[in-house]
View (spheres, rainbow, N blue to C red):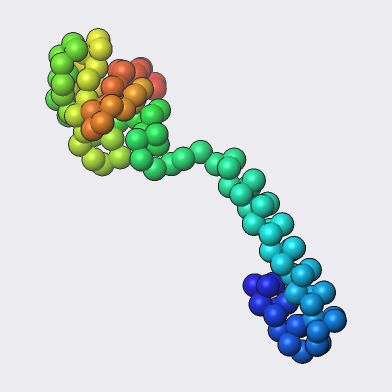
Amino acid sequence: MILVAGFVAYIVLGPPLGMIALLVAAVIEVAELYLWIIYLRRFRVQTGPEGLIGKRGAATGAIPQDALGEVRVHGALWRARCRDGCPAGAEVSVSAVEGLTLTVEQTERQGR
């Protein structure tokens, strides 16, 4: 936006002062872009497979030990593998994602 103001200043003020205004506006735009890049790197990715790790869900059926079952995480059904197995309705936490299969671990429910 400030670059547009620099172009307007170049047209209105004429070549010597307008060129200075345009260059200052360009420097400000580059600095602003650099600061936004630094600021946005602080946030963790929230989408894709990386965003599922650590999320909690529930087993829709019993998951036998080292076999595939189904879990519901964020309202979606996923194939899941639980190393120790878990009963139907157990609360699980996603520990890894391999393709479309989640590796989950059974967690303790709060208050029990």
